[in-house]
Length: 115
Ligand code: SF4
Image 1: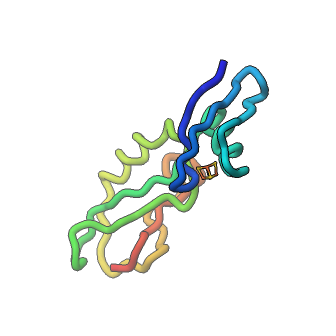
Image 2: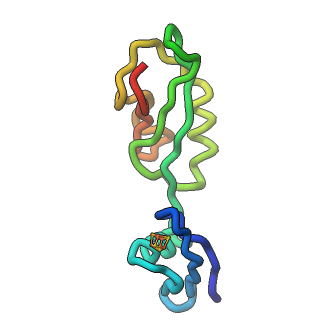
């Protein structure tokens, strides 16, 4: 069985085909990153998550944050739920850990900018 997907590893967006019954062999890729992405997307899909949290005393009302690594796609909803409950206070430096080990993923939520 072949699964079709679009590579998101760069803006070219190659149309990949992944042969599930043939050790997840990937075709349609223009570079090796497509092979890595195609396999991972079917075996263990992960994503960097970017979002915002409420900040008090900042120049804006919300502080951009992101995961400092990829988390399983299935955990995104839980992580977003936890981010909705976070309130931080300025000043915050870019890279500051806002939530450590978010939802037990081993990944931290960090500030994407200073504010
Ligand atoms: S396979 Fe390579 S060239 Fe094609 S979209 Fe993915 S990263 Fe870009």
